[in-house]
Every structure is written in C-alpha cells, then in structure tokens.
Image 1 (cartoon, helix red, strand yellow):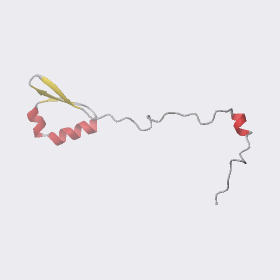
Image 2 (cartoon, rainbow, N blue to C red; image 1 turned 180 degrees about the vertical axis):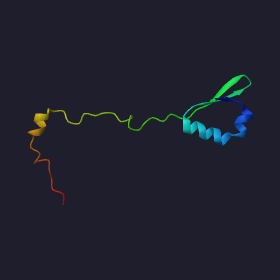
Image 3 (cartoon, rainbow, N blue to C red; image 1 turned 90 degrees about the vertical axis):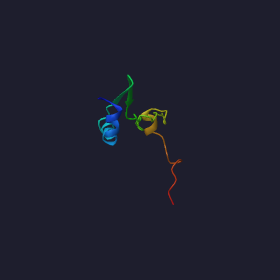
Image 4 (tube, rainbow, N blue to C red; image 1 turned 90 degrees about the horizontal axis):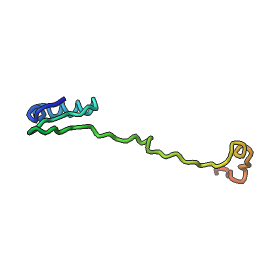
Length: 75
C-alpha cells in the first residue's frame, strides 16, 4: 500500500499496527521518492543453534561401554 505523508500522520498508530500484524511493508511517497516502513525480521533463536557432535563412537561402542567409573551417587 502506498500513502502520502499526510495520510501517515492522520493514522500513524493504526498503520504501524497494521504493518506489525500483516508483516507487509507500508510505502510512503514523498517528493517522488518511496520510503518504506517494514517490520524487523528477527532470526529464530532455534535456527541459530549449531549442531555439535558430542559422542564420536559407534552405537555398539556406546552400548558396551562401562559407565561405572563415571557415575557418582548424588548425595
């Protein structure tokens, strides 16, 4: 949607809320130039997680490993 600065001033809060809800940019035409109001695109915190390899052995090695020396009772 393209609007004039006057229309933006009349309905500023409603138009900003609309951009937030719809995620669609708002174009403001001023002196032949188009200015855009766009919502910030935040990166998902889950996408920022990098996979890490913690155990580097086969499943059989893991299953047949004695963990008795590693285990300590919780007191």
